[in-house]
Length: 99
Image 1 (cartoon, rainbow, N blue to C red):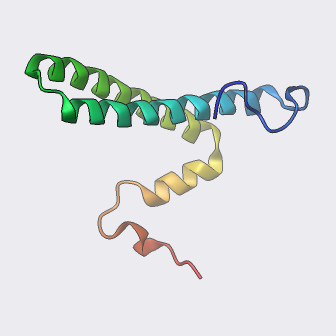
Image 2: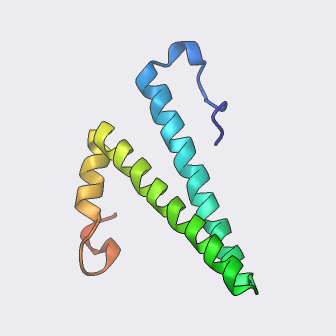
């Protein structure tokens, strides 16, 4: 998903939808970046470089958390899903009943 890629003509999308698209695009990019950081840290052989890259990874985690919070505050249904699913003990899928 890129900033430019929207499935509907931009002229038909309001500012809130475009802002959400920006946030979700950024979130997708940051998650991909987190994965890259983890892989690079795992394979890095220089201890000092590993620490530098870990610092970048940790900053990326904070950015992901901020983006998730921004989305949660603006999407009431996502807010409900996150409140229902996050920070609970026990099996992750146990609270959901799929048929």
